[in-house]
Length: 452
Ligand SMILES: NC(=O)C1=CN([C@@H]2O[C@H](COP(=O)(O)OP(=O)(O)OC[C@H]3O[C@@H](n4cnc5c(N)ncnc54)[C@H](O)[C@@H]3O)[C@@H](O)[C@H]2O)C=CC1
Ligand SMILES: O=C(O)[C@H]1O[C@H](OP(=O)(O)OP(=O)(O)OC[C@H]2O[C@@H](n3ccc(=O)[nH]c3=O)[C@H](O)[C@@H]2O)[C@H](O)[C@@H](O)[C@@H]1O
Image 1 (cartoon, rainbow, N blue to C red):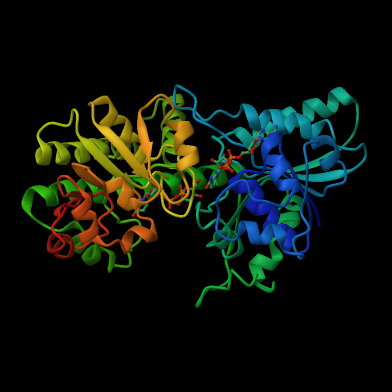
Image 2: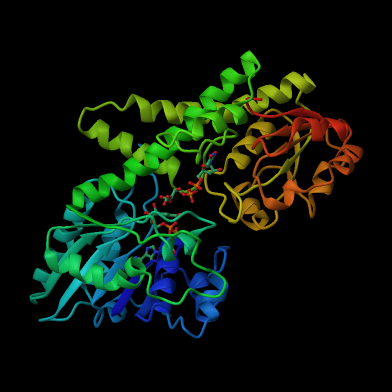
């Protein structure tokens, strides 16, 4: 099928490249010139496992342009995957989605039919709103075009974006018209039936079954997306709340999570206590859900509490440091990890950066390391005096304490004795609970985890 994807960020680029690999004729549109320059050279503007390889793969014939109207004219399916950032009042900003919709409408051809899909995470009612925007624009142009609208929320995780796209847990389509559902069923058939030959670097996971296609109305589809993210955020905040109590009573939250997670009704995933959640989605999507509630005069105390607990997690780490060092002002603190999670260079709402900001506010000097996210962190932390180091050992050198903020694999196998030797004061705050206490203490470190 001919597909146009508007917005080549994490979602648009991953989806577009994967659909092109399946054999669809995909054209990706973006307005960001520096991004487009890289894409034209078939280089990935984001650090995402396998994406660079996929873009260079002969089977992935995706092309790129800045011209939305030209890209959509002959497309059968048009996907909008632009950002929906948080507004000051917490609401999701749908400006970019509506702008993209207007640009799409300007390119549609008289007498043709299209399926217009919203992949961005958008507040309830946005699909209807976009339909209105497009129909009005077409009426102004005085042309007759049949547009079938669909909401097709995305569930991929950064760092695993291609894996989640090729091997999804489910595909959700919210549409009023059977034509839209049929178009998306055709588009995704190779994923639904797993009939494609997996890319060499992305083998089909063992035991992976076929993903269900959930068809529903657009409003429910929009709600599925927000409810899923909010639930995951609540789950992490719940274990973090338990971790705080574990600290007080002397239990080990990793043991508690293991014991809880074996109950299939609970499940073991997303019970990792630590610095809390960040990223471009949980913070913004929980805020957006609360804002929708407010619009209807409806409070959502569980989602609110998840956010409160999450904000408190960052402060708890500082309290641990204060307990160990007494005074933070004038201290040197090493920070390992800057991205909001491993395997990505995304630092949006990163817990690591929040901790660095708090440390700087309290007069501590920070020296940080990250395997890939330093350039983005430099940008995000502009104005703060943070030193960026080439290796984790350099980040530890001369430090009064070291905080493990992001659990990159390379931090799992550090020579802890060497870290301790390089530090002025060998205090290790394990903000992701990846080390064993005995191992750290044997290496001469004073160990502090979260909830253990
Ligand atoms: N990042 C993630 O892991 C996931 C994100 N989402 C949702 O998907 C949406 C997109 O997120 P990301 O891909 O992370 O955003 P992003 O910020 O990485 O990419 C958005 C892209 O859209 C481009 N853009 C904006 N307006 C445009 C226009 N009028 N025409 C063409 N291009 C335009 C921007 O230049 C940018 O490259 C958001 O609503 C987000 O909540 C959903 C699931 C996962
Ligand atoms: O809507 C989105 O954008 C996406 O948001 C999340 O994906 P992502 O933000 O990429 O990353 P996650 O793996 O969910 O991690 C989010 C945050 O939670 C933290 N986390 C995760 C798991 C855990 O046990 N503990 C924990 O603190 C991570 O460190 C990270 O800061 C969801 O997992 C995706 O399904 C969704 O599509």
